Amino acid sequence: MSRSPALSLSALLSGLLLLLLGACGRAPPPPDELRVAVPSLPPSLGNPFQAEGMPSAATWAAIFDGLTTLDAKGRVVPALAMGWQTTDGRTWDFSLRRDVRFSNGEPFDAQAVVALFGWLAGQAGQATFMGGRFRDVAEVKALAPDRVRIVLKQPSAILPQRLVSLLVPAPGAWARLGPEGFARKPEGTGPYRVIEIDERRRQIRLAENAHAWRKPVTPRLRIIELADEAVRQQALMSGDVDLARVGLEDRVRMREAGVRIMRAPSMQVMSIAFPVEERSGPLADARVREALNLAVDREALARILLDGLALPASQPAARGTFGHDPTLPPIPHDPARAKALLAEAGYERGLALRAEVIVGSLPADSLIYQAAAAQLAEVGVRLELATIPFPVFLRRFLSNAWTSDAFGLSWNAAPANDVQRPMEIFSCLRRPAAFFCDLAAVPLLRAASAEIDPARREALLFRLARRTRESWPALFLVEQVDLVGVAPRVAGPVEIANRVPRYERIALRSPTLLAPGLQAASARALSPASPAAAHAGFAAAKRYQWPGPAVLPIRPSQTSSGANPASTSSAAKSQVA
Image 1 (tube, rainbow, N blue to C red):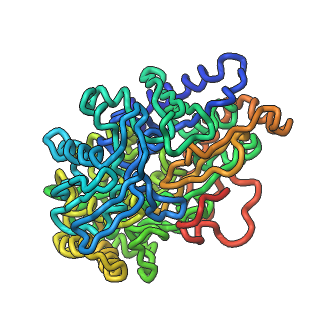
Image 2 (spheres, rainbow, N blue to C red):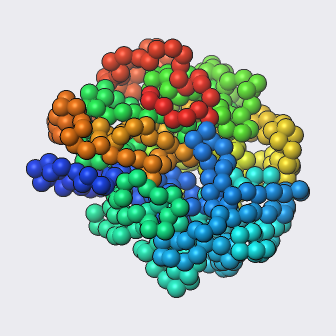
Image 3 (cartoon, rainbow, N blue to C red):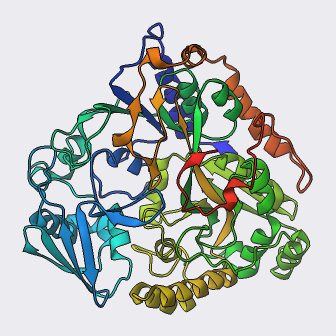
């Protein structure tokens, strides 16, 4: 896999930052500050309208609230709105939480919601990611200080789920500072308030929001960008951060250092998308797209590279996401049929493709891409993988300006935990432009969006899932999981909701309360072997001869007893992997 100069530089800067963090003789960490390492800070910093979901949500969850949110079981629950109702899916009434103030003291009320949608409806708002997501809003009006009505242009059965990702900024601060100014001085209703955004060191320092309705247990928070997964894991083991998204390569060493690894559903299916709209080339032929899917052994990817913590993917929705069809058979691994389809399409001698991907945001994602490429090579498809940093990916995604044959894109049902959104992204309905368009799916998508009866709507989504097996808009890989490493000084369990730890509920132990062995482990600096071990894992995936057995160089010292944890409902609470 080729690495772009930008990503290599990002990894280098992450490593240098880690050295700076630990350069002062391992001073004890601040007892009142929770330190969180994330793959990327939001490209728009404190402006919550330019992206949706991870990795930006890992920062914004500390600062803002939406009208609704998801709990640890993936269910939509109240946040700034205490309740909602509709009779037709088009007109929705929301009752709002009372006596809430933004971090700058402004009151939160129905007028704040009206101001939010008013800005999104304007020219500047419509140009943002979230403005595009809510183009179907026709009118928003305050019925009372604590009641607001949202009227849509057409019915939407999942408006409360969609509102999970629409975060509410302080209207006065937004109007006064504008998007650019607000991005550096954001004001929300979340548990923390931004004190400093250090763009040079890629850190954000936050302190308790004095007006928060979600009062934090730990009064200070620091969010640190560490783009490289191996660097995040090293920071956890050396005691430089308290929480981080991690992978599996250093799982044993993390446990030896006292790091707990929490597993939670990511609500997404990892895939490689096929941008074929208004394009020619091999992927414009459905037979080629089907052949690529038949060439990949998903069961091996999930079992070997993800230690059985994830499941093979065969449809747009992961298990536990609304719209997953349990009766849809898995995609078979059939290299012979793949070769026959390629020959039928005129590619009996094979073909070459290039895909742009981002890595380090999901467990073993780099290994999975490389292993899939190795399997494709066995049927004559040479897939070149080029890594790009998240800000570059986001620009290309928003503008639909791809320079490659394919690109890594998950069917991401977060934050709604409903498959409607990713299905629309992989459809003719995507704005500003579709990269894949199956006209036969459009009536089903519109019907599912308008249907407010859950059983009838689920049946429509099942039909859509089967339709994807006829159009093949992507190369399906695995149902991904989130793995979060938790340092020894974090007390008690860590609740993960909507893919983000509930920062406000996390308490820190006093250093004197740590067992002596854990004190030594958390203070021990790692040898330089950790990055090499990760590279050895990459090399092992490249050498792996599918579909025979393989042993990665780093494996858990013991396996969990009982059933495969990935076989339980993905609606289950986060748990130790």
